[in-house]
Image (cartoon, rainbow, N blue to C red; front, top):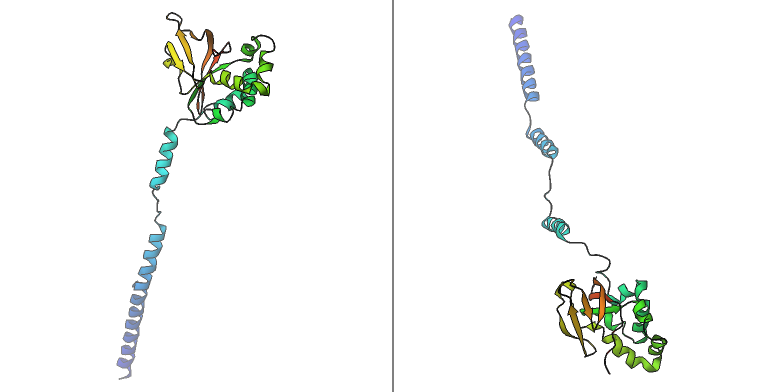
Length: 208
């Protein structure tokens, strides 16, 4: 009788070992959750760019750069060009710097220093005297048209000025050379933020 009991115990022990091994190999719900979490964490996530970022990139691509001249006013351009030193001095004496710094737009027929130097001796000095300020203002305003006129848009005929008196524009049919009251236009289309400058070789004198 001892032999069968021993065999039964051995059989029970073997069955217990099998059960333990089966329990070890079966994944628990907790283990499955951990594995799923690890797999999810390993998947790379690519974020789509925000709509605002895309729009900004497109705007930067299509926007034209602004030149230094276009960012400056008529007075600032003239002040940074030694060709117009006498003109700038006259504008300051006439208190017209602030006026020509306004949005405008304006077209300025700007005489060079050589143009002012060609006036009779003592003329510029006399105009710069405080007692002759009204005369200086009138002369300078006669060089300003209260609108922006590019060279391609200049037509022969009379053009009203800020001073009130008209300028007479002539365009040569052959050479397309432009004159203003007989003064030659030697350079055109210096574009400013508030208008345009055309350079002339003579000072324009309004009639009395």
